Length: 600
Image 1 (cartoon, one colour):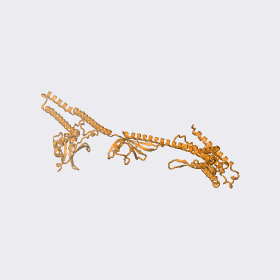
Image 2 (tube, one colour):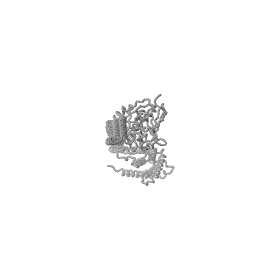
Image 3 (cartoon, one colour):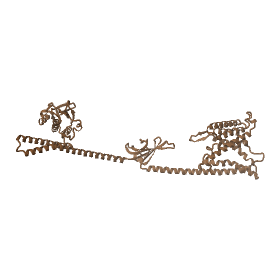
Image 4 (cartoon, rainbow, N blue to C red):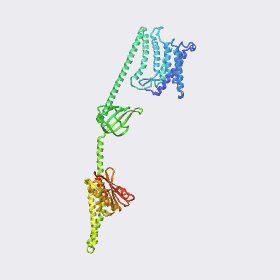
């Protein structure tokens, strides 16, 4: 039947206190007043039993929590006093003196523990108590065989019984004073240590049994004292062999259980290894210093390593998973989804780490393909949007710019046909001239649209040759309306490298834009620029171009401006040049065309 640990502790301390009080009283009864004087103190070690018993009582005495140190200190003082008195009797009673000194030192350092190299702590008092108990048993065991000897011829002993018995009681009481660290500190039912602890009483009882058997043999008529003692010793030896056999069987059972545990641990290790190697994810196990301990088959396949890497690869940060590049043995990288998790110990500190990698190369390829497809779709949408915008702009331009001359031609032709007979010749000529002017305007617009489509499809190419600027500009001015308001300031030797037809169309559109949307006078000048370039400047004297129109000045369609500047920009760029706008000073618009100069 098991006893509660709390009750066992209380009972153990109670027995220890009773043993201490009994030893102190016993020591006082066997000590005369004369032996208490300093001169006679070394005659008997019984004097040391008094402070030793008091020390044991103080060790188990329940007191307030605040007085614990005072109680332990007082107990240590009495214990050391007992050890000192025992040492004083070393000459007259060596065995009793040694046992008393060991017991006194054990009481003084009852709660002192020392660590071993294996990290296990042990009580300093345990070997001291063991030595004192052995001495007391050595003194008591021969006395147990006394009934087997003839009267008046008992066996000798190392100390008197009245000293050995209280010393043994004091030793047992000291052991019981700390039940939490003594023989009763655990209820574990397995292991050879528990078997030894359970068999300790049987080993101690063996000489007692041998003595009792010897006395019985002597009383039954066996030869004294040899036969009686021999019979007791033989029976005790047989009992001891039985005890040893039981101990060996316990050790064998413990060894069998240990082998079973080792085999079970090996099976679990094999299962864990099989589980690790069969995972589809690449796994790498590291210690607390980030050194690789183990990897699985998938990790070796993913990285191309045959075994453990010589050094730890770059590791992802601990926490949730994220995209990572895992280096391979051939120097390339493979995209993975990586996670890094810590393996905590009992205290919560990391004792190792597990890195898991999932191959996402195919996912990355799919993402790249989807991104490229999305870019194509976006470009297609942009092209569709541009085509829709072109259609809308073209429709708007045709509705506004084309409808006006067509309506004018239709009205003038109807008037001319209806009133031809009644109209004078000069009116007929004026109406015919207006019809011709609007017709030419429509033809020019159709030509611009045709050129616009060619520019949009990229079929316009420039055949660049040296073109004199002055000659080209003068030819355009001669055919333009309002040529009298146009002045030219270009040197005769200024030559541009461009397509002659393209340059003529550029000058025509710039001059028409200046005369139509600006104000005379218009000035055209040519300048030689650093870096082997020439610049053609067309400047009018109007109010300039509004600020809100400037961002789309060279776009396809500007309400009321036609396609002129859009054609200018594309033709100039096709010839390797550039065109931009500046505000003229003090007023007006200034369009500047930069082209490469022709080599000499």
